[in-house]
Image (cartoon, rainbow, N blue to C red; front, side, top):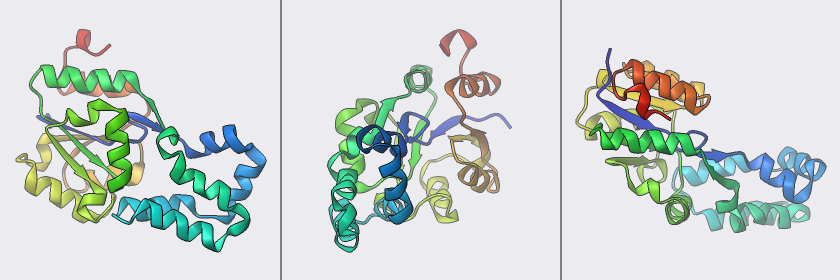
Length: 206
């Protein structure tokens, strides 16, 4: 089915999200492995993505793991440095779609505070026609409810949506509801899918 609107995940589609890489660089791989083995930072991030306070969530983790408190605090203090850099070609594709008049939306697991930080650094996050941000909705992908919210509010039927995300579970949940999906593994593949759906000509995908 040919899509009429494109729904973008943000992390690892438009902005790189590799926390382990950041900590390897700043505290070294050995200390990073210890940190991530003892502290569920990704689980804490999921909590923030559901709407919890970043400050309070990180403070709670640091309090119960005092020997790693300084490293845990880095997740808060340097969050915006963890989130990046931009995946430049993906942003160009987003803007090419907009120039063509194709509706573009964001569907992303993102906290309230962290999305505000990202907006300040990455202005293209204000260029979507609609944004569905988990922290504001109180539910994260791949829960079925978040896809229902998009369908209810976006004015497009499921078969008219093309959703790109880097996680298989998120893609599968959307596909189960009749969305067109693309598992993101680099902007080259996304460009090919946009051309295949007739949303962009090949010469506008570079």
